[in-house]
Length: 375
Image (cartoon, rainbow, N blue to C red; front, side, top):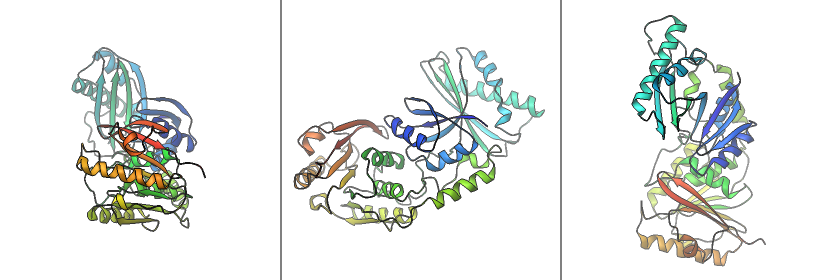
């Protein structure tokens, strides 16, 4: 079946997600704020959920239309072929959002959409009551300037929930954002990578998963797995293919350090759960003691911001340590995400080679990219 899919993304990561979608072999129709729309089929739903590292969710797009009255919304929703996706025992909920639309009451819109779907399915299946004992279908009606986009969530739990994070520390970075930071750094498995403020190890772990080509969704389940339109053999084939794609014999040079002993222990546990503990070296270490482990390495890090954890004095000491390190190691590159708008001058004494506005949760941050000198 020819389907239109949407990979949702954190603001600023659309280009990263688009590259991931294209790398899977799918044609991107358009890229907008927070989403990448592309063409695929039932197998694409499974493959996208398994392999997209930086997307938040994969949505199945059902329709898009204009509606500025409740009756219009009801009739257009009811006219859709819901029976193609939701079986007679399907359990479905309706969520929604409304921005700059005449139909601004989200609860009212949700009620209308739910009623329209129920009426359509009642007619098709010739029943009066639905048991809703089967697979879960989360329908979302997104209204933006009176334009309605109707989708079904294929992922279930957000894609950042890889399943390996057993131990957390304060203010952990999301796995999807960490994967994006690695990809934006253009790190490759032949370079040394260090995160000197690793916390529970998310950045080193995501780097190792990229280096070993481990599908990020391999050890979790998705809402679509129980859908009737997804042949069970597709899931088995795609997971088998993902397992065979893992580079088991690759040697990686990835290091994660933190001043907090508990964080280091958490990072080791998480890395073991992710299956990458054999290629990351974790240790308790102050940033001030950071030393080069070779040439042309790269630091990718999410240091304390001050808004969340750590005192300003501690943050300044981190900056000073970075400044000292890069003066001694000018061939190394630094990729750092922070809310500090003055971090460029504090850390390197110059403007970054590139910078990108990103959101870490609700915090507006900048991803500063300093490229090392070529040998």
